[in-house]
Length: 396
Image (tube, rainbow, N blue to C red; front, side, top):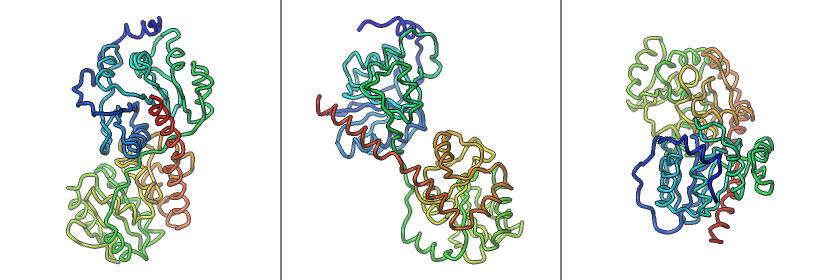
C-alpha cells in the first residue's frame, strides 16, 4: 500500500530517538509475539500478558517498554525502536514477530505501517485514547484513520475510550469495550515461619508500616506516629528507611527524643515496650506488608512519589495511606482512589489522624479489601487477549 500523505509528512519529521540502533540479542528460535507498552503504568499489564504467553503457551515474547521491569524466562525486554522507516524495518527484519500487540492507544506510524505491510496482525489493548507518539504531534492528514483501520481488534477500557477510537477511525467491528487487563503483581515474598513468629509476638498490638522512608520525610513520619499514638498508646511503627544506612542514625535520633527503639539489623525484636521497630533489609518488604494492617507509602508526601508500588501492599492485604505525589504510579493511584481503596493525606498531621482512624480494624479491612479487588481485577480481559493471540497463531 503506497504511503499516504500523512505518513509521508510524519516520516519527513523523523529523528533518531533513544534506543535507535541499539544492539539486539539473538532472536530465539520458534514463534514470537511482540508486545509494546508505551508507559511504565501499562508495562505491568503487558508484562502479565508476556509471562502468561511464555509460560502457558511456550512462545517467545518480546516486550518493548520504558523502564526496567523484571521479566521471567521466555520474555525478552528491549527498548522500542525509533519510529523511523529504517529502524522499523531493521527491527522487524530481526525479530520477525507473528503478532504485534500495542497498548493504551499510542500510535507509532512508521512501525505500525511497516508491521501492517508485512501482514503481521495487530491488536490494541487497554485502549484509552488514540494519540501519536509523544512529541510527534502535528498535521498528518488521514494518518490516524489509516493506522487504526488496520487493527484487527481494539480493546477499550470504557465507552468513552471506545467513542474516541471510533471517531479517530477504528473499524466499528474492531472496537469493543472490554475493560482493563490485569496487572503483573510482583508480590514480595517472605519466610512463613518468620512471619508466624513475629505475628505471635505483636499479635495484640496495633501496627503500621512506613515503607521506604526517604530522609526528607523522616520527620513527618515520626510526627505522624506521635499523633497516632494518642489514639492507641500501644501502637507499633515498623519503619523501613529508603537508605538502609540511615537505620543507626534514626535509632539514635528516636532514642534521644525518648522513644524505645529496636533495630532488626542488631537482631533485636519488637518486644511489648518497643515503640518503633527499624528494619532495613529491602528483601523483607513482603514480610512487613503481611504483618502490618496499614502501610504508608513514603516519598508521596514530600518527595517525587512513593518509593514503592501501591500494588505491593494492595496484593498483600495492607490498607494504603499515601500523600499527594504519586510519581510514576499515577494511573494506578487513580483507579484505587476511584474505588475508595486508599486514603490520601496532605501533611504529617493528616497522616497521623488518618492512622488513628484506621486503627479500627474494620475500617482498615474495608480499605484493604477494596485495594485488593482493584489490583486483582482484569484477569478475564487478559484471558480474552490471550485467546485472540492464540487464534492468530493457530491460523498462521
